[in-house]
Image 1 (tube, rainbow, N blue to C red):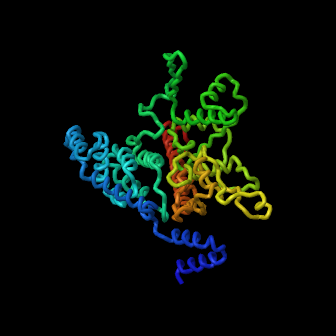
Image 2: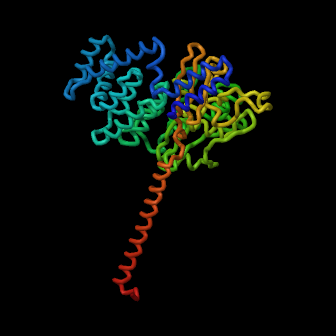
Length: 447
């Protein structure tokens, strides 16, 4: 009997033990898990199918709009705007998308399914426009892999999440072509000492407007402190900032988690990968080091270590299509936690393998019973709608999402460590030989 046959027999045995009302839902989940990897939007409702046709039509329009290198921009924009009945800006975006599709045929092939909207295509075209011929093939290969689903019924990533992922991808292959981070300003990077700007607008007799320009990582820290004070004091951000400046905020504790990749040295803060300058800045502020990993506690409240692990794994809210950062999300027991059930040895666990990050709005929908969630050991989560029974799968996108140490990765680390060791050893041997030769030349050595 094949592995699939054994799996089906085991599933049917489990189904026979379930209450009658749960059997169909579990059977549908098992069928979805066995299916081929596919974007959920391609196999859902009539509304979804209509959107897929629109997405494919946008691809066709972009291909026709793809300009020749010597084409005049203004003329092309006017012609397309008139033909399509759109603004010149949108017409030029079609040109940019078409150029990407022509220069990256492998990306065009995976986009042809129609799962990605015009907004997604615009992000892809903008993020890859500066990639040169030398790096295009490598970027194209990784980008095609990024746009290919890995599990059945996978939710299409949000536009913000996709932009962040493509930004990191391009920066990894060609740092000079890396697009600005979604949260960065469009101005060129400045020296760290000149990155802080503060201006005051006192033109209004009723109020004063303060404008603060900060690097992304510093702004993240400031906002977390302000939000913590606002939550404790039950007030607005403006009032919380005022109390901080006046020294009346009281004692408020804020923990920001940084995730450091041991292989590359890159550091991730909240929802952003840091530059080397920012990495050095935050490493100097680190007060505690730990190795993230799965854990369980007997209480309802998750520990700081568990919160850090969940945020690092999830990256964003785990509800399909939601882009809100996991660092400021709530922590949801996938299976409802109940004190009476805990005493009986049942119910949801406060464990990292049984919890996920949900923003307040998505958490409320799940709590109301509008969606059922099943969290799997690989970090994927199956979301089943109560309305029509369809299942959508989300995958984690945080810096710890692929932190499982495989034998291949283990070998890569060993090879890199050994190469580093041997390079240092050979350098020392060369220095020793050079010193010996120099000593012989000066006749200071007896041999």
